[in-house]
Length: 420
Image (cartoon, rainbow, N blue to C red):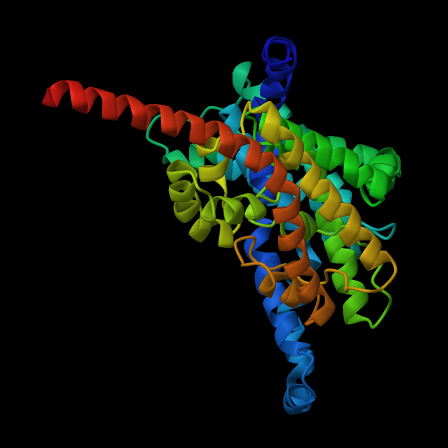
């Protein structure tokens, strides 16, 4: 089975993971992380579930919402900037010029019928438009560069001025094309893209969609490919839009719409890292094997902060058919359970984004606006992870103990012979 995977399946996903466009989208989306975390920080400050605190900050509660408006409120614009820049790096065009053209084209694509910028489309709603515009801009710019169709300035002109004129024709082409499509022909790019991606957007908000995503992401990881990274270019914009919708609903005092928002994967499914390996680390800490006990001690500090590469490559999980089973089963069980508990209202839904390295219990508590059942459930997820991994770990431990016993016996025999 492993030979077949290596020969036929892994090369396909490796090509997908190395695709320049998907890599640029993934890297560009990471630009949103500091802004969403900072915005969430101000939201948390303004909504701590402590009456004395809320009474104290009531005079400035509106001021605390100002940073939220300029972080969550322009996520689409941040995505356009981030992806435009990273695509330029990947395809070898001038990063600053490409980023500026992308930003201007995106703003043009979000104009209302009376030709004013629509602030509503600058948030997560406009992310798909931002991605498409960034790709279109970069490909047009690269075409002009490759074909050497540029306005060339005479020698002695400062390089910054030359670069500005070199980007004039790509800028005119991109902006003119968007103007024809959106302004002249009145084609709403955002509505069309929302309609195209609606099945995928809807699918990832459902339990079956979450299970398929989890199965694929963890399967790729167990084959040595960082599954969440490979799928990030497709899934992250969707999960981020869910988070933005949840945050907006929370601010307006409305019911929180989505269970699977950005942060759900880390906080409720990846306890200790992808695959929910915290349970495996705890099992190793109690192991009779010197190797596994040492690996457990080395892995535990990083596992607290959701970093589990020492386990994935040190145990190893990669290309290990035995451990592949709990590595996939654990996040699927945790994800399904967390989804159902949120659906029926037992634990709170995610409304804030917290750093992905935040420890268990604390992270779910903060992300759900101080929801105590979510923190208690985080403890339960650690226990569930331990129980799922334990029988598989015992099998691996038994084999390792036989190896260690054999090595010790060999060392003893060699020592006796040498002494004799």
